[in-house]
Length: 476
Image 1: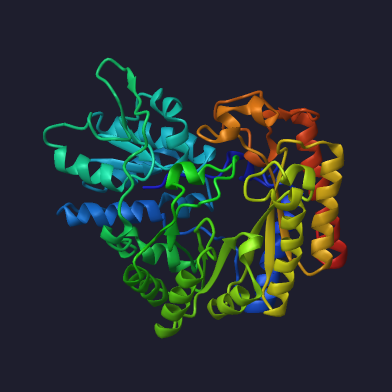
Image 2 (image 1 turned 90 degrees about the vertical axis):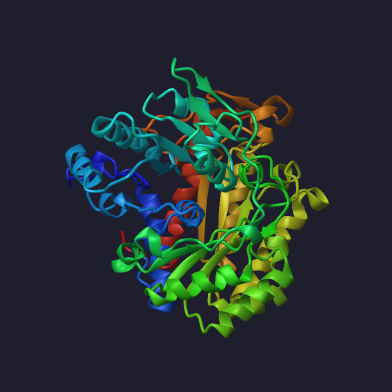
């Protein structure tokens, strides 16, 4: 299952939503553009959890049945009381519970669900996985309800666990963390062994209650590759998926796309780190898309320097409702410190961003970008440079921009050697459940305090807020 619940403070009109007005403006703006252009009603973009879908297919190959309870679908609309969760879980027959954790909010919900499961049967093993538990295993295993945790890609570790479950011989599984009988946390210092993607079965989409996911939300996620060669010092993807890019079998993608289309998916997001990195791979995917007569509009993320005019024309075939690229910063002084974006002292990547916007516009595609505030070298001048570049890109045709505060994750170069990069870590642990990551800075740069980093991000969001209101006629 994938536990998640909306915060209590959005349940009544009198209470304040955790989404700021500026964040609401961005979401409303993007949804409005998608509707105007493609008639897509992107009121919510939750999707089948692909990690659980992959594990489900692997476990079923071992002759074990699985069932997915999508609590997230109900919890997006209302708060689910403990008793309702308990009654729902009691209605199923199960031996082990696996929980997928993708955010701090989901982390604290995981503990709530785990307590309910243990209340029903204290002997039920509970296993968790995902990027967040991989980075903070000690934090999760301090909660006695959690029995097992897998660091990194879980497929091979789960297969080995299932095979050895009768003998309880799991201590030697790489990436496997667990609670001992004495309550001691045993943390694997290594991530689980990466699987050969060619040997993995397709995602078990139909086993993930796909009918429920598609009933009032025709959105899906799709993964065509894993890994990223750029190893940006702030990004946890390379640590989790590896630096070598691995591509999933085209026949697996064929089956998954047809299932998603059969069940009514209208739009989706390719979750690859850099979808347009390899031209041959993109061409094969586009050919598959055309051969199977897929109509799902697939947005994707890429880098500005690997999205050429030729690539724009090629990806136009999959009718992406957004082409998204990482902007990171509009300051050459900041970009020149980032691996992969440091060419020509940081100025080259800025030029590529303007070219990317032009390529997307020439192909009549919506495009947007993500920006990270609080990177090494950030100061008040670089904040102004970033704000100017974002507005200039918007005037050049960029449709949306998402402003994020740098989060320094364990396993990344910024976390392991902050002084080397000119950062000071104020807080290394996971934020508490009342601290949304888009309003939080746990570090300082050489010239900016955490409070100044947050204020700088808010100032840029405010500028975009005004721009969307005035130039693109978004109502408050």
